[in-house]
Image (cartoon, rainbow, N blue to C red):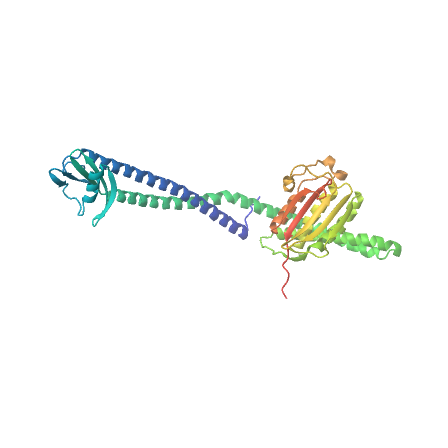
Length: 413
């Protein structure tokens, strides 16, 4: 069997999905790298600050002569011998005011002191017979942090780029089977629709020939038989429209919804389904507004309403009511029956093959595959609407299914 090929629209959707997943992967990696980078910079900066503090405290505690200090640290010692400073102490240091304050209060003073050469960390303390001020230049630490930030930025940018490209590539490979499955489904629908068009055409032709012969029958018989034949022709035409809609759905070219009279389509469906309902002893009624506009495809809406009505008739004990309601921005079709209803919230009713009845429970041995309501959900989603299931508003036995479609905006004059 030949491999199903995706259409141009499906390939475009595949590309958009792959790009979206790739960008999402890159964004996720970016967030993770930002968290790691910020944490690393904060930890390193905290370590530098603690190390600088220890060096300053060590210099103040142990300095007896200005020359005996660690590299990168300067000290100034004021004692009975006068003021001693480490060679190379930046201009403007030591800060004599801080040393005088420390001598007066006896407390250690930690300050940042700004001079023309830069900003320095200082610790001024009093020791027996002397006042010591230790000075440290933090510029090396700042340069180290700056290099770390640059390194993390470059590595992060490369990581995000690789993650985005890799996510796009993996997403494309992961989504491709789905696109091929959709292409196979579309081809199956197209093949099935095409194969069914021929017998439908023959059925319509035979019905038309029968209609012509009926007109030649006696008048008292021709009227009743003619109405039944007209119904047969109408059902055949509706079925043909459904197949055309299936073929349109399988066509890669999109068809935009049009403004349609939802109430008129509902009345046609009800009239078509009434004979089958009467055979089962079910009264089928259509209520609500006579004209309700919606933006949809008439054939697709007819399929959806037919499935809802068929489902209600199958479950009803004696009555099914179909009501059309207009809204501000939408239009609703409500189908109520007086059957046993359903257990739970009914969310699984719109899943494929979710029928809760076996063949022995179906009327006249008709088997239920659980596809009707699933197709209703798909049609509603394609048109930007939805379908919901709930109990009857009056609290009686039965179910209430509501199909919501976008309303048609009034035409401007």
